[in-house]
Amino acid sequence: PELDGEYEIELDGKKVEVRTVFSLTRQYLNDTFDLESVSKLTWAPKEAIVSLAHQVAENAGKTLIACGMGTNQFFNGDLKDRGILLLCALTKNIGTHSGNVGSYAGNYRAAYFDGMGLYFAEDPFNIQLDKKGKVKVKKYFKFESAHYYNHRDKPLRVGNKNFTGKTHMPTPTKSLTFCNANSILGNLKGHYEAVINTLPNIEYISVADWWWSTSCEYADIVWGVDSWAEFQFPDATASVTNPFLQMFPRSGMKRIHDTRSDIEVHAGISKALGKLLGDKRFEDYWKFVDQGRVDVYLQRIMDATSMAKGYDVNKLEEDAKNGIPALLMSRTYPKIIGWEQAVESKQWYNKTGRMEFYRDEDEFIEYGENLPVHREAIDATFYEPNAIVAKPHPAIRPFGPEKYGIAIDDRSGETRQVRNVVFSPAKLLKSKHPLRELNEGYEYIYLTPKYRHGSHTMPVDTDIIAVWFGPFGDVHRRD
Image 1 (cartoon, rainbow, N blue to C red):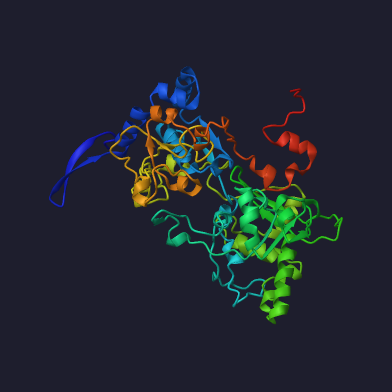
Image 2 (image 1 turned 30 degrees about the horizontal axis):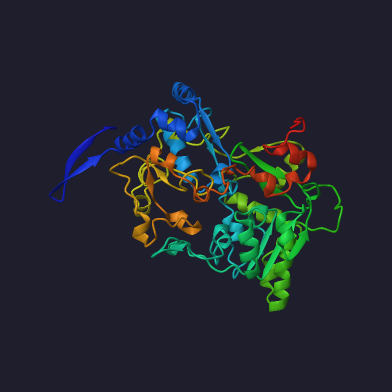
């Protein structure tokens, strides 16, 4: 195949110019990111940039780029990932154990239990009360990202355009009930906005946790639940970084306080609602919790899960007590993402079956992101926030602010999210963040990935872990 080329072809009797994606990408990188510009933009010495490039290229199949949850929380995290995947594709560092992209964000465990729908989407009007019976699935709910409630449950409507779109239109949040997840409330972005302007509009917030978190601080009700050492029900999990099906057996330890399990809290709330409404189905939906047989629900999930089908959860629990591990039934041990595509030439799970470095959807073209471009941070930058960094390029033609009826100098919070302006490296380096333009001493930026699970839930409640867990703690420092 022709990787690099420009051609003229005939479509509907008309001649049009076409170029390969590689050709467009190479022009963008070569024209925009010369060594001098990259060094100035990144503060990295030129020698270090050249050295790193050579090391990656010379170590095909041996360069692992690990990106944890922290950097994936950034506003332009998807562009960061597209850039990393492009580099790894060009240097043959995808699909091998030591040459790959290690990256995750969000509820990464759930992907390995694709039978979970049998549990959380069981038809509430046809509840299966037989342990061995077939479960009917019917979803009566809509998934909605927590980001919408964090944005005061309102769509992103700026200028003359609603950027949220029909498929992601948020609904008003009237209640929040969750457990062991500080990121839903305490660790969310824009804390002042959430506490002062969002939470007062929510009628009821309850949190189940065994460590006092910021979420507990702002909840109406906090349910005291069992610690991991006191678990009275079995549970299971998995991780993207290892091949094990991790079973959590019941503890032989008695409860220290008058606590309940997370699942008992939710079952209890449901039972109370059933009494108020005179409907026994609220209780039946959690039947096997009341009977101390949550293994029934776990078994249903395993039976419908691609990589766990055939496992007996009670045997898994006994094995776990005796230190005998279980493996997820994936193709490779350890897990190697992209192995089938790299080694067996299987297709990727997208429209073309190949890695796609050009997006032809209207939104990507409109926002100037049809190629994997670099955009500045939306706030933590010395320069123009969220600017696309590019020299003139035939494929990078975003809609400017004026197209949406936005003043060219409007760089307020919501406008900044949809403001597609293109700056060359030289122009960007001369630009200033709006606060720096005030000349009032705003000369520092705060840009750090969250060490996510430190504030996500329980670990940093213990002083010694708080010190060692994050990137800033060192008991031997004297400064």
